[in-house]
Image (cartoon, rainbow, N blue to C red; front, side, top):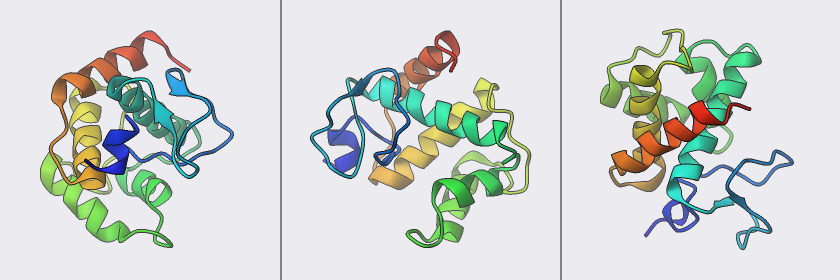
Length: 135
């Protein structure tokens, strides 16, 4: 099982000063956050991507460059992977409050991060938590 799935952190969100609902504190992982359930981890991904949009990262390319920067990732391969699995174009503006856009994006990002298909019931539950508990 991948580190992200063990931590219920399918997006491999790094430790930071940002606190998310459902976050386990203190985390047993010094580098990455841990969540109570995978759904809370998916919610954190939706929250993080939405925070990027609010900071001016409007396109999918902008968001992925921020989320998976080239200093530690093959960002182009990451972007190509998610685009090929979702049908979204990299320069498409992303509406982070549109379920039909965001659920496939986050599921594909999880697959990229963990090397296995996302559990779609966890992703959709994470979306519901995101919509219910807006930051």
